[in-house]
Length: 108
Image (cartoon, rainbow, N blue to C red):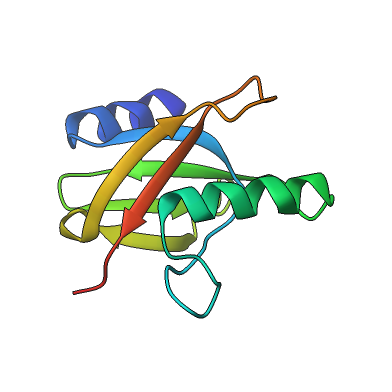
């Protein structure tokens, strides 16, 4: 059964990765975040205050969307159309051993 599911994903031109989701910010006044750099700084401050925890998710990349899913139930938690993604960066913040994937999306 597991091989069948894997082959279905591979054949469908979809990539899937197990990730640890940390936070979602809205750029603008609501979260006080205006740039990716602001988001990185805010994340570092929140982390130093113990206000960040990782939530394990599946990151699924398909030809049309990037989707975050619950790894067990496969429930869709967040969905971003590829056309809405305006920036994608992998950064290694100071003092961290793992890189962060930052997706910047703009609603149409």
